[in-house]
Length: 121
Image 1 (cartoon, rainbow, N blue to C red):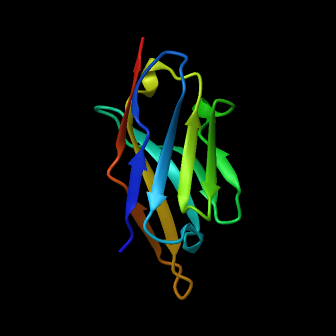
Image 2 (cartoon, rainbow, N blue to C red):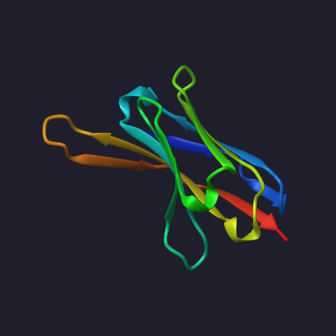
């Protein structure tokens, strides 16, 4: 069973930085992609950043040039470095892992329990 455990959330002032980390229970090389999502109160969960098995990254437009996603296959972690944080980015941040079964292309999504990020104004 896949387990994803996030850490690194907390309270930060506007313009500050935080680094989130997601530790997987197994080898992250087994996942086609991993990423970070966030969900603010009363809003839908939204994609923040993803990184594929081969290291290709993508970002939501709102975080480009401020956030950086990275993966460490040896440590089975995926990190999200967040700089220049804004109050509207206050949310619960979730780690996600995607596995696509080769035999039939069925996609399996795994989620962590989330970590709270609060940006004070």
